[in-house]
Length: 51
Image (cartoon, helix red, strand yellow):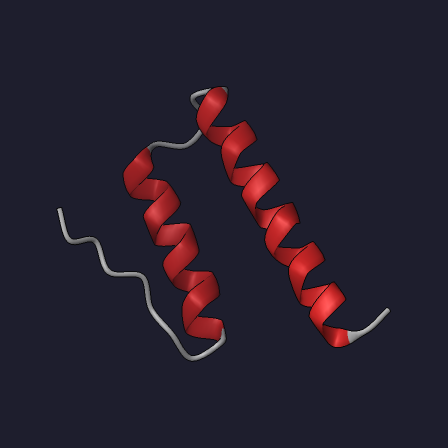
């Protein structure tokens, strides 16, 4: 497995988990943004809520 494949797999896993948590009402949109921000900051970025 190459690094891009690992990265793509990780993104898919995060997306699947967040969608499940949202659909089961265990996570709200604001909470999802906070989770994504934590992940993004780990890789030198940030999530900006423009709403």
